[in-house]
Length: 305
Image (cartoon, rainbow, N blue to C red):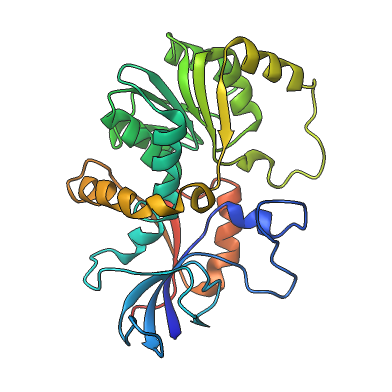
């Protein structure tokens, strides 16, 4: 079938596809089409179950206006969906990532303290809001006063700290007087350095991303932190687990949608998007994403219908 892209998602994992270093997925070759998730309209179809005009989400369409699909990694969407771009965010891969990473690896319990890095990004906002729905104290870490105010005033976080401040370690300790039970890792770097001393016994650390290190060309400066981390994992009996959402949890996607869709409709989980107009502006927007310039889920509008 022939697909016309309407909305395209920009996500940090794409940076890893630009490197030939060993990873969980093959790199995109020079001259190849960058991978992404897209909301598309079916233009023509020779596939059973798909007809012209269907609204679908494709994980293989890539950074292009049109693509030909054999139906693999394509999911039908409600044709009357009010905000189709949400299928790329809160109701798509980022929301799914935040929900499953928190609920299956983090396993939050009422009264516990949950800290999430990149708190106003598409994954972090879901993590924080779902943790609040579980009865947890939620502390976010984000870049800038505006984002931190949004996390507290709009999303209902108990506190949010600006990682650009010089006293992050001290402020995080004040915000987490009872330590940290769940830390959802999206960033790495100095943020994780501030978190480590506060991790409680039996803390859980879902590792989703390390955006602070994606553009690194050499080992980080300063002392070797590995011995400290290994001792902490042992002495505090911490569970620290990386995950790739569709590799680990693909069959759970319908279950996630059954839970998240009504939460979004009822306003229990709030959504913010950073929309960019035009496929030609995707590269600059993606570079801004890696620098933390976006505010909310970053999507590119390619066509109206």
